[in-house]
Length: 446
Image 1 (cartoon, rainbow, N blue to C red):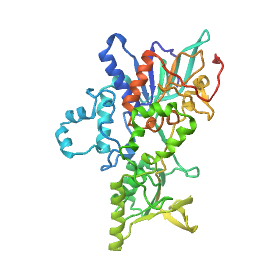
Image 2 (cartoon, rainbow, N blue to C red):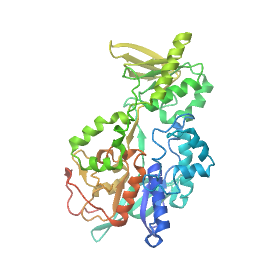
Image 3 (cartoon, rainbow, N blue to C red):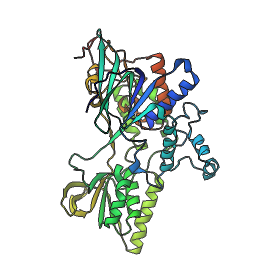
Image 4 (cartoon, rainbow, N blue to C red):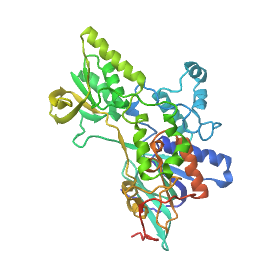
């Protein structure tokens, strides 16, 4: 079904997606409008889910955040905000108990509840059940001052919202190996908590987890606990889980000022910094969890009842699924020796990839500048550079290639959305030269 109705009003901002990043932006808009009613920003966020949810399938009961609670949706931008995690705790009547807990890292389930608490306070800015399918430039007399955002609801009804600025905050997508075929037995760990109940009822003999990072280690620990008669096999290429570097100096890569340094650096230096500091975020595990898994493995060696089978320096080279099982060929890398494991499920904890903004933008991608690698050229204020005849703004949350590790993480979210809102209100500032594919001064929209 389609709706032929034209947009009756123009929004200042239309946000695509409503995860933590765009939730933080909705809060920034809400607080701005409360303080400056004469300069009100009209924002609408379109979210395909029926309600707020942030990786619900990864909300393991005892998993904790890997970022300080002070890096919530607002505090680093405005410590006085009543949208802070501490204000949430006050409203939930747990502030004293949390202080007594003496931790900087809340449970992930608790932080998710904090997000839901915040999202419920800005529902007037959100349209749930609206999946954006494309963005269309609106050209009038050769100028593009507006963008039409086209979305469909659960019934397939198409609607259009016109915007002066579009903010893309669609988050990350699960990454699977090229030869992995998702099924009821083969899935990404983002589905873990949705699947573990059915697994427990089926009483599996063996479950295989592929991946060496935090999510992989959490999946191994959860499955080992939830399936007391199941062998849980972990496969990864290292000799052991590697600890995350959360030391004070290394954590400076997540400081807001580091974004200034990263954005202004050469492509060579950008890559060097990403490589140097990957162990702060990628393929690493909290030390407490590493030690817990080692304790479990050692305890089983002592008792002679081995259910935790951690296969290091190994990789899965081939999988074949039948009606009865998944057969995974595992190679021990130092010798090349292989073994075929019969598994009731294979869980890929193989990370995430950023969504391609050009796929989402559709026709609007034609007005965007790209760098030599084909990626969007993004200004320091997170605005995608566009042809000269385009005055409508396209902003991107999640541009790691231009803004560094914090672009996809919570660490600088509160500061990032403040900078984006400031740009929307007052216009772009500095524009450093970037090696890019030039566009003509005007791009005609056919």
